[in-house]
Length: 312
Image 1 (cartoon, helix red, strand yellow):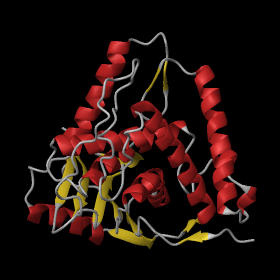
Image 2: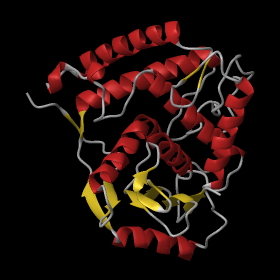
Image 3: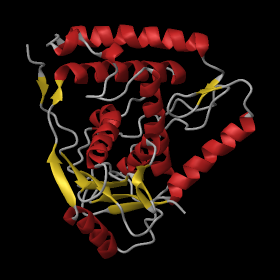
Image 4: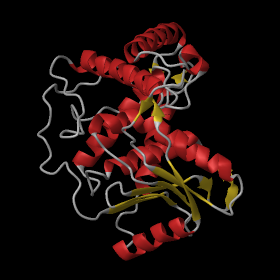
């Protein structure tokens, strides 16, 4: 039986650079990064028309968001060596940052609250064993690819995630890095926190929204399109969408337990949700108000907007 199909495509197309080495790996990376953030995108009703690879002359430029999600460009390869790829975790963090620019332009408090929330949700999904729609580990695949009723797919996914969480709780250290890697007890906690802050600062500097004019940004985008090969996105299997939805619901349950009954889940009208999590390793429960911040005056993308990420 052919797996059911889902028709709510979230990333409509992918463009990788032609005439570059390892093109198949570049396309695979774009799809992988998109898959990792799909539950986050779906919860907010966002769409990305085109996710593209670019390799700009500006060696510290990491990402670009054109017209609030009409096109998001990501650097996949090391500057100066186009044969070597950046870690997928770094590219994913760039993607999370650029997604925030769908609703917020400047790097203000609202932007950082949303970015923290996306990072928090991404980490929660990874901790539940999520590896992306279309990239599920064997332990999360259901029925050998056969069609499975959605309610059963979600039930099985929840069972698997809960078993994984119980196992992780017995083996991990006292904290977690973004991405789910445990913090070992013999590590210098101050160094762990300093490294996390440094990673965030590099990512922040990677968005040089004040360094280029809109015309310059458009030129960068057009160059990537001209040198790229575009692939239309395939529809997602409903089984895998059901699994990701089940894991997403588990993450939301964790958030509600953490912040109480006043927890506000993210939505299209309120993408920040309860106001953002934290990207830093937590060793004690952070103090945080259960009262959600006011809904931003403008949460629906309008007009033309572009953002960039640069790594100094």
